[in-house]
Length: 294
Length: 235
Ligand SMILES: Nc1ncnc2c1ncn2[C@@H]1O[C@H](COP(=O)(O)OP(=O)(O)OP(=O)(O)O)[C@@H](O)[C@H]1O
Ligand SMILES: [Mg+2]
Image (cartoon, rainbow over all chains, first blue to last red; front, side, top):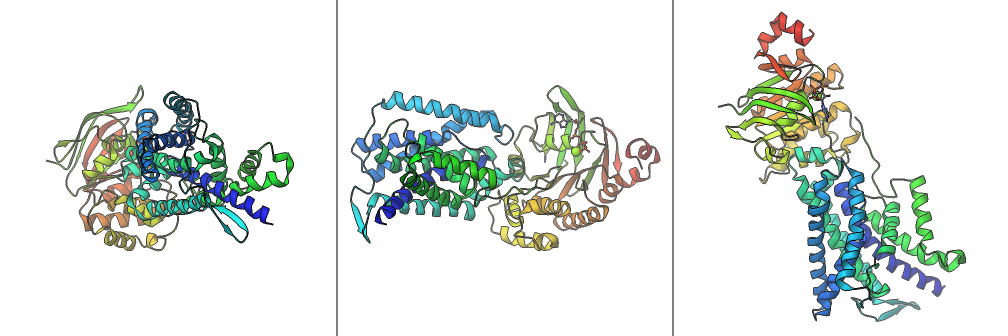
């Protein structure tokens, strides 16, 4: 029983990371209606920035803020240089998706050039200690990741539901042309979405790095899990990303424990989940169904 | 000086020319209609004026050249555009659609205006939390108009509000529109195929054929000019 609970806790901790990366994907999806394949590499890149700042002797939390800010600027820059010149992503979705795949490769190459191919060590933000609750030992880092996730969700819900910028982002995602006619500066809103998504990814990277070691392929598996999370939760739903992330995290840690065939295929449960959701409930658990009437 | 002065407007899509030096004007608070058959270039005219597509010639607002600006920049100068097909932001609620309409306003009367428009268009008031994409065509047309008014425009560009609506619903839309333009003093540049309805509504009219203005004058005169009616309006 305790074994099961411990695996569950590990799963929830991983799930929190998938959810964090998923939040960034949702933010881009909500402003452009597209999946951003570069999300994981953006997160990796800005996690390296965090490492660089931390390595220079700055306290961890300050380094993270620096990395988020760096990620924000890089997200904006990439949008302006590589995405925005293509025009409205709602009109040329395929071109933009291809560009995000190109950015994936470019960011990965750039990171290798700057930081080399030897993994760096980033310590866990909440230390290496653990508590024992009811016979189950839980790392502070796992509890911390859940708390940070909760804070991020709160911030995003406020942003989307309570602020004017959030309203504009939702409007642009649904109908960019009309949003523009209503006075929303569409290019600026899209740019902001990219910046926010990249900043969000930093946090996911900072929690992943202590577990896997900080290398240029840091987020590649996590991105697949993140895709699975938002597919399950619904591409445009903040809460969906969280629930989806948790389910994917728990499934991927529990299933291989009990079904030996999955031990060597850690991604398989996630893929099966993506497939099943797309078949039976394409809008995900919490996503909005496309309602349209012409 | 007119509120809107369009002069020698030329534009097209790629190598296809659609407008061949079109000129028209709208005065402060004036209701003007551009009539024309399918494909005459009505929608293209409005798109060029509001900056959705690039064009040559001149578009002046209160004497200031605005050609080449983006739609959101034109809105800042007081021009709201209700596009053909209504441009509903389908994923948002009725209320949120209206709030997007007020995006550029910084004054404190936005929520008072919201209540006012929900009252002026009772069908919207009953549905303020409904997802806009799930409303009927007539309701969406009223939403599009109310949303445009949320920006407190000086000039409303309105593209075929009668499109796809039953005659009775079209009447209702025009009746409401007449009320609110009277109340707010907003000028309207309407483009329509439905000549009867539009000439009843507007004070002045232009007839557009194949990208050129072929006739213009007070709406009442055009309504009684048999030659024009036979040739262009199919009445
Ligand atoms: N996006 C486009 N690309 C290419 N040609 C276009 C485009 N939009 C319109 N056209 C062409 O421009 C001409 C004018 O079209 P426009 O939509 O302005 O006509 P309209 O008067 O609004 O017609 P309707 O009453 O059917 O709406 C037409 O011949 C049309 O085929
Ligand atoms: Mg048209």
